Length: 295
Image (cartoon, rainbow, N blue to C red; front, side, top):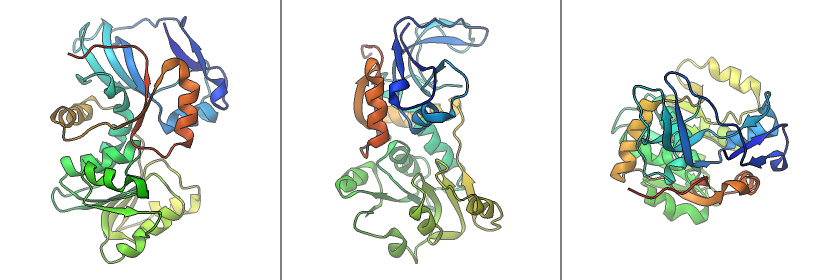
């Protein structure tokens, strides 16, 4: 079967594509999925660059495809599924970009103690993979007042996603604009000076959510753990079929959408990684593995 894997860590050149990877055997409770698409997420190039310890290592956290074998009481052969590795019934190709980032956004929001219809949420980098799901889910599921930051070119795009207000970070300082209008939850996948400024607009009982653990100042992380009123949290995504079902409902309604930035065939996985590491685009980067007709 087709696969992309690494046998050592390094740059995109360590990625290997093969059509002869050994097909895995499944056991009780498991299914085998013929993948239609997956996506490239920041965790993929972090693992590739140095986090991987066991080889060969197949990268990728998103699955979208059709079950070809099942030893599960819940799923049967022919079911169209979407999952984060460690389902839902998709309109299948686009869903390869959903699980990891949509679950990250959902779980970050869910951990924010939001009050439906009352809370104020700030999402940094709203046009990104996690960000564009966070903006939409905060509106659709929590009915929050959502502010997001983005580049000049993404202002209209972010408004179309449903953001109540959009800050052009290339021209404006969000900390100045909202110094007297603090947020109950701040989702930050940027770090650095953005993180420092975010603390100044966090409500008295607010939560700062570090999405990708970009904060390299361990003293600041340790200090955050001792906050007594405000809270500092790190978001590490976990697989959840139940939460994916909720997200799928919004996708099927059209309330939430997965925006595709660019699609690469599997054999161009190196190019996909290079693009992902250097992009400032919109939404997700999809990797097409096979074709699947719509139903």
